Image (cartoon, rainbow, N blue to C red):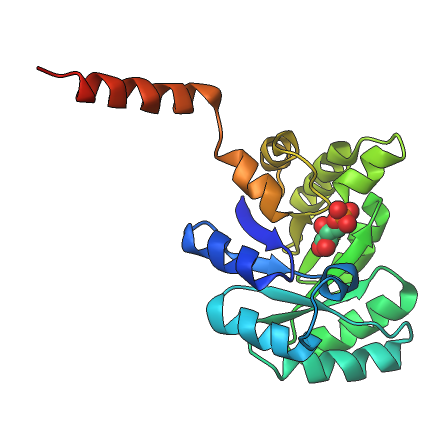
Length: 214
Ligand code: E4P
């Protein structure tokens, strides 16, 4: 499973990218809205100059025509821009049009397996099931990853599954076990993945022994 970072914050992207573990970036309108004094387009330029992998940029229009127009403009920013489109009939019309033009797409706000199947059949490059938001309403988000993964495998569908709305390290491990191709992870959770108390304790003990050597 590859790791994407789920943020529009440049400091977080730079720091995570320097760790050598980041294969792509996802943004959404809420994440972009947190960034001050920078336009969406300029931020996308900064990100794509640093990260060679997929960088998802979400359209705001809700009608297919508007999404296609916006998406085509965003796709001009860099060849690694992926157009993120919401899971609606208009969204899938746009995905279909983008796929004919060779523009990569990420269908977002996927909450059941049929939505993932429809998005894949429309030609989506990626589908993004939202694990944490399903957990929030008392459903099991990780089960959705397993179901989509099984369907895509049985029917040899090449669309990649991005486990999104990740809230904690256990989501990451489980998404990997259950067949997500990618997990898009907030910076805070990426940093949590590094930690184990026995690692800290081990480093401390090694240093203590080294400093006390005769
Ligand atoms: C994915 O592409 C979304 O940006 C993101 O994972 C949503 O996460 P949230 O439910 O924590 O807002």
